[in-house]
Amino acid sequence: MTIEEVFDKELDESITRRYFTTTVNNAKMCLDVMGHTTLKAKSLFEYHKKNYLDYLEDDFDDEVDSDNIEREYTFENWARAVKKYSSILVSDIYENGDYISLEKCRGENNSLCEKIVLDSLPHCKDDTYFGIDFYYLDEEIGSPWDVFRIILEAFKSEDIITLDYTNLFEGGWCDEVPEEKEYLVSKTVILTEGSTDLWTDDTLTTDYAFEYLSKEELSYMASYRNFGKVGCFKGFDAHSFAFNSKLPENMYEKQFERFERYVDMGLDIYGYVTLTSDNYDGIEEKMGKFVDRLQKIHPILPLRTVPLKIFIFTPTGSRLNDRYSMALENQTRAIKAWKVELSKRYSKEQLAGRISDNTY
Image (cartoon, rainbow, N blue to C red):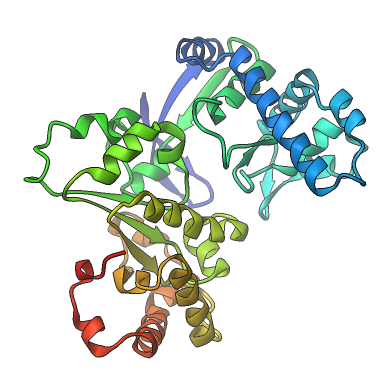
């Protein structure tokens, strides 16, 4: 682990950078020990390929050349495409939401595997990582770590891998040294069930729990007495979501899908919503659609959801520009629209009740 003072040219100031480093060779060995081997990656690919072919044959039977896909869409060709675009991304320039060299590749005469991999980049789109769809996959089948094991094959053994967690630390998401992932369930069993309230927050921007916890562990979470969870919706529409999270607008809907999975599990889950944005035009209509989407998950979900008033975070306050300052000032417009929308849908008695009295 390294902590050092560096000068940030973009911010025109010194910052404290925090990061871990290791070699590609060490990373490979660690992943292999954990079971994320190239053989496991091949097994994952073959499973995905079968599902992919079944999907095409069911929905596009007359339009698809299955024999050609069977012949061209192989593990070797897929792995070659993964390594090709990994090598490009590692030195690519990110500008205006796109990677310059990667975007140029889209205009080339790409092979089938190259096109499938490229279509899922640069961001994880629709839970597809380098062409592998993880949305409905059980962790026993595979995980993104198996794909990462193939990515590492694109680089020399002595190359350095850096995990920079500076922004996570400054945003208050982790301690000086981030904890291991095993804290999620196994380290909570020391609590006396029923006598201790346990509360966890979820950003709704990852599928971490569903990727790394077994069905038994998820069931344990759902059945644990006095356990509550809250998921934070990062905006009232796709634009405000991107404004608040710096993620692509097409990931906005994923928040609701992840939240609904927790509801279906039987968790005692509540909601936050961040209402800051740089565009409040038509806020009444936008808020109506947002509340509609909450009620699509469950009719009483808005009653279990709390708008968050965002304040200036002292460590990053000096970085605020006019755009973000205005968002902080105008968020009261969105909160007012939220209150008006709920008054149309619920009685005064319902709105005056305790949030925990509204059960699924």
